[in-house]
Length: 264
Image (cartoon, rainbow, N blue to C red):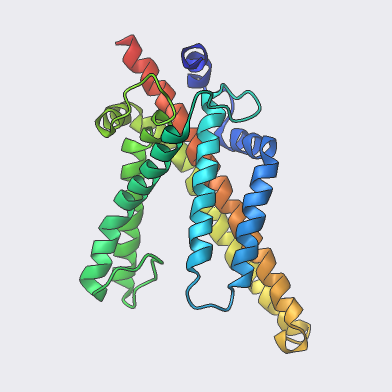
C-alpha cells in the first residue's frame, strides 16, 4: 500500500493548509470531541493556579491528532485515517516516541531555565530580564525545529510493520528531508502559531473592552464564563490544527525519504 502511494504523496498535490483543513473536516467528529472536552476542562479550571489536568488532556489530544495526521497520509488520503494492521504495540510505540521527541525538544530550554531560576518550568514563562527571555525563546524554538526537522519521521515509522523504525534510521531519513520539513514548518505550523498569537492579543483586548462596557464581571459571572469558553475553544482548535499539520508533514517526509532510499 505504501509503495503504491509514494509517488503521489511525494508530489504533494495539496498545500499543507488545504490538506490539513480537509483532514480536520473529514475527521470533524473526533476533532469536536477532543476539542470540546479539552475546552470544557480549561473553562472549569480557569480560576486554578495550576491546571495540570487541562494541560495533560490537551497534550493527549494533540498526540491523537498527530496520529490521525500520520494515518491520513499513510492511507493515501482516502478520506479517513487508515493504519491497517497497526496494533496496540505500534500505537504504544507511537505515543512513547512523541514523549521522547517532546522531551528532547524541551530539555535545552529547561536546562537554561534551571541555570537562571534554579528550577525547571514547563510553562515557559517570560523571565524578568528581557535578554534572558529572548534567549529562552530562541533556545526553545531552535530545539523544536532541530528535533522536528531531523527526527519527525520517527513517528510515522512506528505505524509501519515493514520498515526500519529505529531512531538512527529516523536521523538518516531526516538528513534527506530536512529541507522539505523546514519549508513545510515555515509555511504551515509556524504561520499558524503567529496567527494564533496575534488573534489572541486582538480578541483579548476586544473581550476586556466588551466586559467593561457591559458593566464588568460583577454584573454577571456568565460573561466571564462565556468569554473563557470562547477563548478556550479558540486556543484548542488552533492547537489541534497545528497537530494535524505536524502529523501530515511527518508522514509525507517519511514517505519521501523512503522513496529516496529505495532509489539509491
